[in-house]
Length: 153
Ligand SMILES: [Zn+2]
Image (cartoon, rainbow, N blue to C red; front, side, top):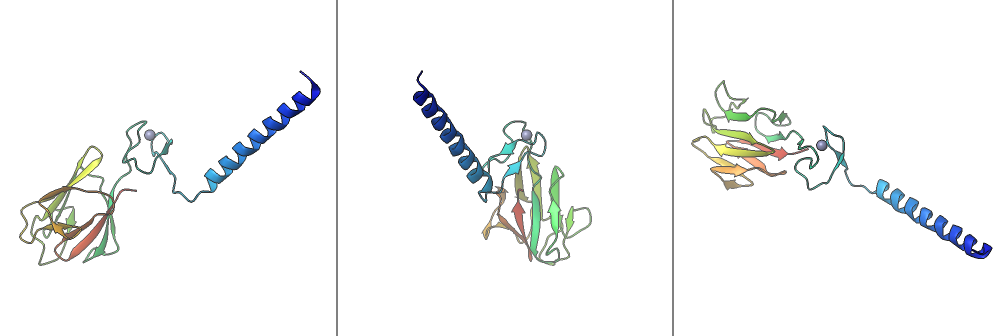
């Protein structure tokens, strides 16, 4: 191999390294909210509801925006979370429009299923009355005069 060919190879190699560095820098400065698995710490894609490596899922929560619980957050850590007007419910709402046992949220693997437990005034998701609904991030749940946003991270 001649000297000029070797020099060319070195320049080409340096260019490749430079391009890799620029691409890597661009990637790390991009304003994407990168999530890491809470269990195995590997990077999770934004569209993943759970970690594809180990099955870990972030704890979902309700952020109350209207009613007596406004500005409070409830992590949905239990298998079943109930909402009603009497003691014994996970969330007790002192609201005349809320039934004694109004609604329940059941954790099924990585999904959360909201159900009307036979309430008088119904359960609404995004303004629609529903008997049962698998919740998606950003859904707005209405029970009586209370509204809460379902969040996943
Ligand atoms: Zn994981």
